[in-house]
Length: 72
Image 1 (cartoon, one colour):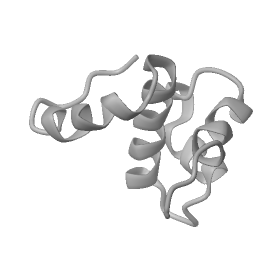
Image 2 (spheres, one colour):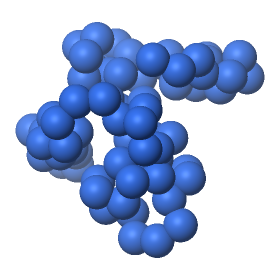
Image 3 (tube, one colour):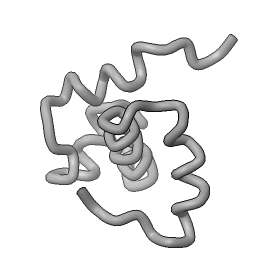
Image 4 (cartoon, one colour):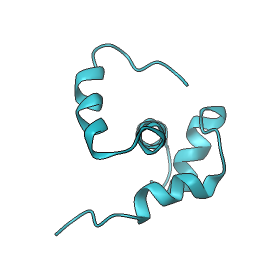
């Protein structure tokens, strides 16, 4: 796993309470991919942007965003 910059740690770690540890790690990778993505903000585009940081099967990352209700 990569290291999060110290300036971003308080912001990102606040979200760790909402996820399990493996899901939180995947969410952090997707967040980084969203920042680095040049094209559409799809999960596949985010995974392409982070390259080898996205360890695991692509469906694991898709599951992060499709399991919960994000708005009420």
